[in-house]
Amino acid sequence: MRVQVNYEDIFKRFNGQLPEGIFLNTNFEGEYNTMTIGWGLMGICWGKPIICIAVRFSRHTYDLIEKSGEFTLSIPKNIVMKKELAICGTKSGRDIDKFKLCGFEKKDIIDKCDLHIECEVIQKTAMDKNTIEESIKNKYYKTDDYHMFYFGAIKDCYYTKED
Image (spheres, helix red, strand yellow):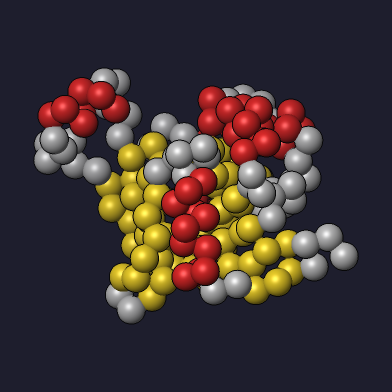
């Protein structure tokens, strides 16, 4: 059962879960992928509720978001999903079936999570390696594998509950 929720009511939970990880789900023509994100922003931009996520150009998820123009975030009920978050944050969907490995169904949400935020990309911005602070560049971009920032308009925000 889906229970709609206002994004403003989950802001604290979203920010609190980011350091532990949130599942970023993509799907294009039946090709599903999920990865773990630990960075993101939620707020108002262009008069709309927005979530901004960062995806490295080298990630399989990047290719799928580029094709689909949408993504869904699935937030675990609590951090008992550490193993699954670790797998999805370190393995590539190009190489393995992360859904099978984690025991997830292939759909737009991670059904073992209870909070989901569906977004449509309305703007994207590639990082400019020439304008990033040197200390950040040295810490996070030693291999020149930069991020695309996706600004997703929140289309739906809901809890899933067992009937």
